[in-house]
Amino acid sequence: MTAAIYDPLVELINTSPVERCRFCGCTERNPCSIPITFDETGRQRLARSNAEALERIPCGWYLEEVCNAPACIEKLIQESRVILFDGTGRKLA
Image (tube, rainbow, N blue to C red; front, side, top):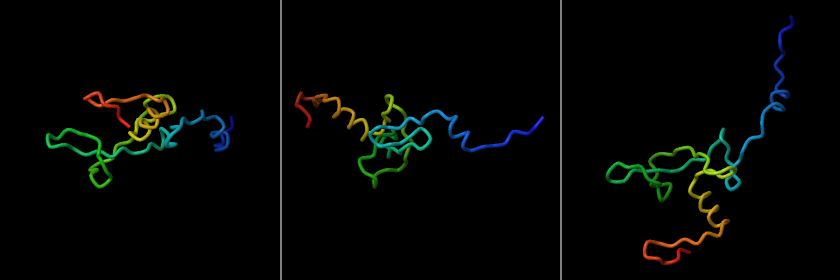
């Protein structure tokens, strides 16, 4: 009985294709980060800027080929040509 020889090329060939976000290019193994902060009650919310961010959490998958980072969701909405309205019924740009 012979010992198996580790061949990195065979490992590369045998792996399934890596799913990438079509907007930012992140993968499950290399997720992008979502900046978060906390409001006055201690609840977690999206940070409005990098300076406001207290933590960064890894993204997850929203749809196939789209992660749940806010910028990617915004691009998906724009791509889908969805018209958004605010609470008063005014169309958002």
